[in-house]
Length: 90
Image (tube, rainbow, N blue to C red; front, side):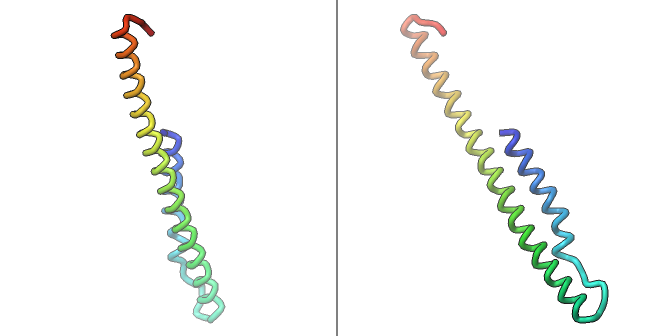
C-alpha cells in the first residue's frame, strides 16, 4: 500500500515538472517559433493528463489494498474468536 502511495507521489511530482512544458513560449516572433512552442505545449498537456491518470490509478490501488487489509483483519479476528470459543488456540 505504501508503495502505491509512493508511486502516486512520484507521479504528482512529475506533473509539477511537466507543467513547465505546457506553459512554454516560443523563443522568437517568427511563425516557426510559435508553432514549435504550440506543439510542445500540446505535448506537455498530454503528459500532464497521463501523469494525473497514473497518479489517480495508484491512489485507487492503495485504497483497494487498504480496504482488503481491513477485511482480512476483521475475518482473522472473527475466526480467532470462533476457534477460542470452541476451546482451541492459534
